Image (cartoon, rainbow, N blue to C red):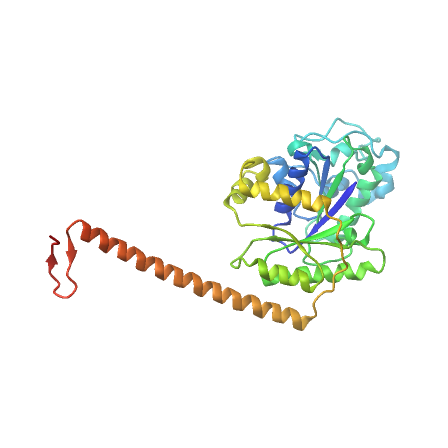
Length: 353
């Protein structure tokens, strides 16, 4: 079983990348399980469209986890029942009083049979989201999700917030859950800043048998599209960039409908890029323990990004100015060819004979 964790700053496109990778691998006939670890519980949305599924933590609270604890909640009923369809959980069952959770109540099938689970989060203003991830994943393990699902998952993908690498969100870094971590980033400074913090977390756990870094995925977001910035950062921390995803309109159109690009625009160029990236990630075995950049180097990274952003802005201004000049030239040429133009010196209309 191949186990992959995607980390990255909020809004950088982890779920876009993760769900399209899952869909592409499912196209190849692989059984895939995606576990969303974001409290917003929207990591798997592109695989299940408009269908809402209960989160593991919400269902656990309904079933009495706060009173019974994990052992009382799962007991010996763990693993009973296969995953439910996208329309909802399976049939009724469990211990007296409905205090047991079944596997088919927390894992659902989405596009091409991809298994989807959402950890969810604590009640607003109460508890820790990271701690919630710990509880949710422990419940999945007690339900034997990785062995009992049919077909048995060949690829497990964790979609994890990376702004803060706290205890719960760091679980896949500890070595027992994921084989490799892939960081999704843009060329935006704050995205790279978060990526550097994630590298720091990976290095922290590496000495304790933690999960190594498999590399970076460059997902174009924000005002600056500069692959060289991301590749330069990856090299400096001792890693690699495995793929680049452009800011394509098909991605936005697909996500409005709650779909992956693989499903929405299967013949598009960006869908093929996701397919290539999926196979690259699946087959990649080149890992490293990153060396995060110190604060002063990150300051220089920020300065370089600002410099490049200003240069790109100046280039775009010159291009717009040139385009306006060309447009005026075309308009004058059109007037001349029609026999009507304004003599700029005399202010009188002339006619070309």
